[in-house]
Length: 136
Image (cartoon, rainbow, N blue to C red; front, side):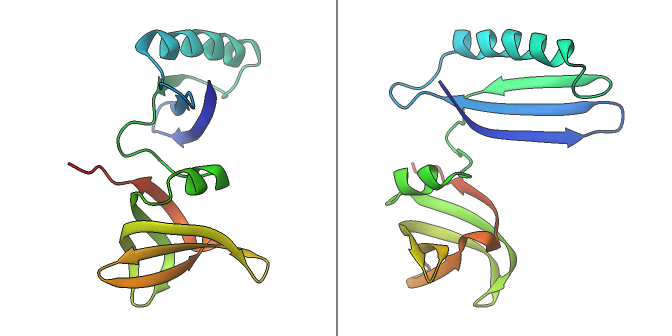
């Protein structure tokens, strides 16, 4: 199993820790999630992390899988994605379309997507959030 994505959110009275795990072949089961939850919960408790009460959620990435690592963008080339950007590019902060490529240009990583009939190049550092988009 591998860690796909981690979210740590401070709520009013407690921390919320979301851990997304997967297996390159075959995905993860409910039993896998329970196993990791128990092991990770024990580790967090022993090291008193986070400080204070917390809720731990362990799950598979799901159909709208977050994309956060280079290997995620490479693996899901050809898939539909939804991107939320830090600043507007070509007049928009949100892009939905097909991830055509993920490459390096002039020393920086760039996502190439086909959105609304046009090809857009988006610097990786401009992406706040990226998810696969579920296709029916």
